[in-house]
Structure formats: structure tokens, C-alpha cells
Length: 60
Image 1 (tube, rainbow, N blue to C red):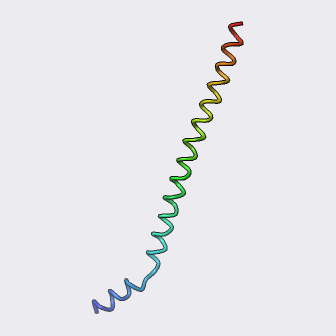
Image 2 (cartoon, rainbow, N blue to C red; image 1 turned 120 degrees about the vertical axis):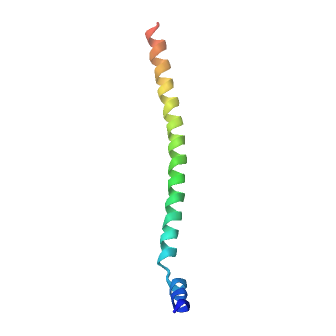
Image 3 (cartoon, rainbow, N blue to C red; image 1 turned 180 degrees about the vertical axis):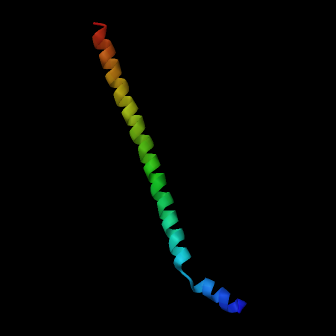
């Protein structure tokens, strides 16, 4: 009885698929976070340049 239960757990592949999807989701999330950080830094620099341009134009 116990041996048959262990064999059924060993042959069941549904859990492996769920783990694979979880790993893929984790990798995609890390990639998105890294890309978002780069985008945020670039956007902050762009707004900083615009702010400096507007400030210097206003003081002339």
C-alpha cells in the first residue's frame, strides 16, 4: 500500500510543471525589475535636464 502510494507520487509530473512555471515567473520578474530600475534612472535624468533647462531659461 505505502509502496504503491510512493510510486504514484514519483510518477506524478504535475508538481514539476508547477515548479517550472514558478521558476520562469521568478526569472521574468527579476528581468522586469532590472529593466524598470534602468528605465527609472533614465527618466529621472531626463526630467532633471528639463528642470535645469527651465530654471536657466527663467533666470535670464
